[in-house]
Length: 411
Image 1 (cartoon, rainbow, N blue to C red):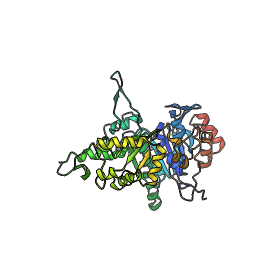
Image 2 (cartoon, one colour; image 1 turned 90 degrees about the vertical axis):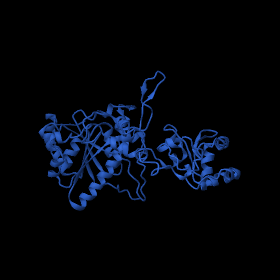
Image 3 (cartoon, rainbow, N blue to C red; image 1 turned 135 degrees about the vertical axis):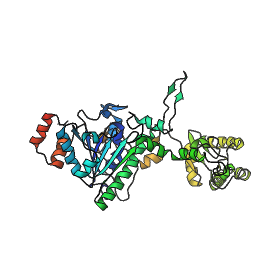
Image 4 (cartoon, one colour; image 1 turned 60 degrees about the vertical axis):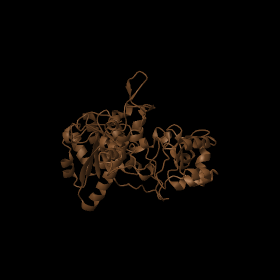
């Protein structure tokens, strides 16, 4: 088994706070050396959100796993000079804070590329480096609210509340950023010239929701140009999954012990299902279109399927789907997913014993390579002495002087 990590040899200098530290988590998982430069006192994300696991937030433990930490006061000239020394030995500089955070300290991209012409620079912020919302303070849900992904609901007293939802912008932007970083590294290694790029977490949320946004845009055109599909007799449906609310052959159904999602919208899957349960009469009566037919509004068929699926367990129906080539999936919650037999077979938790909390690993699985566990998130300044000595070549006496001056911190 090859133990070489795919990004071994890639060095990233990261300046980040809170959940934006996820910008390099996936790269650290793949073996990149990520040195997180923290302000005096450290990233307060360690005490932000919940749960707090033995004194540190799960958010911080997850987003900063596999990284090194150095505490450096970039407001001081000596601290800025030390940052320049780090940049000289790096492939990438990441700033994941308010727009222009490094520029205000004299460490913008023009200065970075003077130090290291091959360096790849990326800035990730809430609303981006331009536009009227550039300097608007924000947190993770703001990006999804802006993108139209999450909307307020009212409680029993008529007050607006935030509904449960997956944070899209907070998670999508780091993935887009990772693609940009890797593209920049490849280009720099070919040309010898680095690049600078920026990404807004809000725009990343919108990009993930492209189907709904683009559908509404398409519906602004006349119906002579933009229609529904042939199975719906070209009637326009609501964008995204909202248009599937009245589906019958593509719908959730209750089983004897849970729920499944039935997805026989292709005629072939529907035929296989009917044959598998010994009900060819259902196919003969409602054969449906070749593709994309959800049998919308067919309440008679829905009643039949409700009784059929209630007759057996979720595991039975999932196994049925495998045996009879029918699209069926089990329904889990975030709490029950870890007990799902497919999850148990494929997923090896990053354990609390070595990472501070049980965590999901990267979903990437490499052929012939077993990824090394990234390791626990560092405490603030845990690697200050190690990085300054090993990467910049400072002596212990020099480091002690910097510590005494408050330019750096070590914990």
